[in-house]
Length: 118
Length: 117
Image (cartoon, rainbow over all chains, first blue to last red; front, side, top):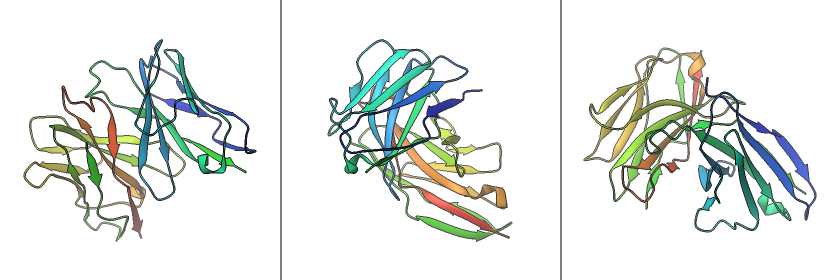
């Protein structure tokens, strides 16, 4: 149990276009989802926390107008990279939690989405 | 603010040898500590976690980690590794109850463990 999927797994787009990445919890209801970004040979960096039915909370330095997050249902959160630029090329990873007790809940991670902006 | 340092980016070992993956953290509040493993082409999976109580925690596949508050460390160990343990391992912390980083994970840089036959 506790499977999280991401779609697409890889995407290549032209500079200036927008890309949407989906994160789904397949067998549980995720009241909270997190979005991370990982650069090559670096750690995962938390971008934002997404709670179902409310606005996402962004980490310092993350542009909320550029990285649009929508947590429309208990099983789906989307990250849209707007007006993408080559520096947005990265590995984007989501995680989901049941939020029984947030601080101790296990986060279940998706397999990640490789975004390449040309 | 919290930070996590994994001191080794790559650790090559031979099968059946012991291994230790090092993790140190810094935090101004009490923390919860985690080790995640990422196998090739898969998402991160929780390996083990320390929340409270006994400082030695174990996973179902033979890994263990010990929380050392005085040294702010949470090193991961296994007495005898298998080829199938080859993966990337991430140490992470989250703020304890009431901390401002409640629920948010801060990750280390990752350690690639390669087990050779």
